[in-house]
Image (cartoon, rainbow, N blue to C red):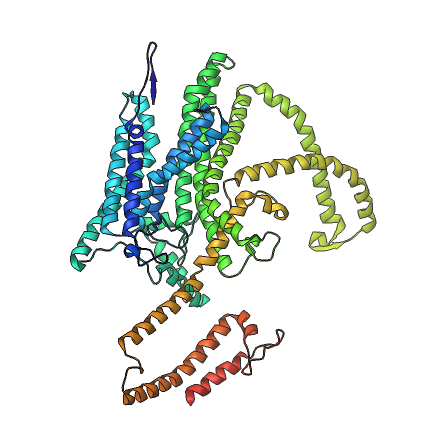
Length: 621
C-alpha cells in the first residue's frame, strides 16, 4: 500500500507483502516433506520404502467430504489473483511494457498463489495428526498476518473500515480452517493415544451415505416416496422454524440421496466472494473516481449528483441480491440435470447424450470439465457487472426523467401513437380469429368463414409487416434481456439450441456433467465397490485357510455339500430378484437371453410371468 505526501513519497509495505516469499518457501518445504511421508504404489515401490510419493491437494471428482473446508481454502487461494487482476484492469498495467512479459508474470503469480496455499489443501486431504498440526499452524500464521495487514500503514478510520470489509471473507475462512484443524488435531491425538498408531493416508469409505440413500430411494415404490414427502412436509409445517423452512423451500427444495460435489460447492463460494470484492471496489470507484470527476465537470447539479449516487448504490444492492438468488437456481438446475442424466434422460440437457451433433472427444470432455469452475467464477463476475450496468442505466434514466419531465413528454408524444396503433391491430386480429374465423367461438381449432378469412389475410399482410418492425425490436430487446439475466448461469446456454455448441460456458458445463456421470454415478460406483468388497472377503477367507482347500477330506466333503445346499437355496431367491429387477426396469427385458443363449427378437414381448412361475416352482422343490 502506498501513502503519498506533498514532499516525500513513501511506500508502506504490509506484513503480508513482506512475508509472502518466506511463506511461499515454507509451503514448498512442507509440501516436499509431505511427499516424503506418502508411499508410491507403482513406480519402484521397493526403493527407499516407496518414498517419496505423489500427493494431491484435493479430490474434486468423487470426494464429498470436507466440502466447506476445501471451499474456504479455495477462497483464500483465489482472493489474491482476483483482486490483483481487477486492480490491473481498472487502474492500468504495471511492471514491464512488454505484453508477453506481463502475461507470463500473471501466470507465474497464479502458480505462486497455488503453491502458497497448497499445504492447507493437503492438510485437509491427508487425514493424520501431523497434517492437522501443519494445517492448524499454517492457518494461525496466515490469520495473524492478515490481522496485522489490516492495522498496518497507519490507516485512518475510513480506510480501516474498507480494509476490514475487503478482508472479511479471508478472515472468516481462516477462522473456520483454524477451528476445523484444531478440532481434528485434538480428535486425532485422542485416536492416536487409543490405537497407538500413526499413519498418513487418505481415508476411503466403502460407501458414502448419500449413495446409500440414493439407492434406497430407487428401490422404494412411488407410493412410499410420496408418504415420506408428506410426512416431511407435515413435520416442517409445525412451529415457527417450520414456517421459515417452507418459505425457503419456495426458492430451493432439498432432496434426499443427493450431495453436491466439492467442485461445485467451492465454485459457488468463490463466486460469491469474488462478486462481493467487485461490489466493494465499485463503491470505492464512485466515491473516489466517478463522483469527484462529475463534480469537477459541473455537468450536473448537487441534487442530481446525489440522485445518481443513490442510483449507483441501489443498482449495486439489487444486482448483488439477484446474484445471491441465482446461486440456489444454479444448484437446483445442476441437481435436476444430474439426476436426469443418471436415469438416462437427456431431455433437460440434450447435449449430454452420446452420438449427437454436440458430442466431443473424451479428451475435450476432461478439458471442458476442468474449465467449469474457473469459467463459472468469471461468468458470475461479468454477469454481476452486466446486471449492475443495466440497472444503473434504467434507474439513472428514470431518475433523470422524473427530474426533467420534458424528457418523458417528448418520448410519450412519439411513442404513444405507435403503441396504440399496434395494440389496436393486434386486438382486431384476435377478435376476428376467435369470434369469426374459428368454429364454436374459438373452442374448436377449425376454420370457418374461409372467404372472409382469405380477404383478411390479404389485407393483414402489409399491416403485419408494419408490426414486424416493432416486433423485431422487441425480439432483440428480449434476447438481450434474457441473455444478460442468464449470463451467470452456465446450465442455460445464451445461444439457441442449434448453435449452443459455440457457447464455451455451456460447453464447459456439459463436459462437467459428462465427467460426473461417468465417474460418480451412485449405482455404478456402488456396484463396483460391492464387487471389490466381495473380492476382498474371498481373498481373506483363502488366506486364513477357511475354505475347502486346506481342510481335511471330511471337512471338504461337508463343505462341498453345504455349498451345494446353499446354492440350491439361493437359486429361487436369485430368480425372485431377477423378476423384480426386470419388472422395475422394462428396458432390460429386451436384453434378456433365453436358455439356449440365442438373442431374443427386439419386438418380441418378454414373458415376465414365466420368470415368476419358475421362481415359484424352484421354491416348492
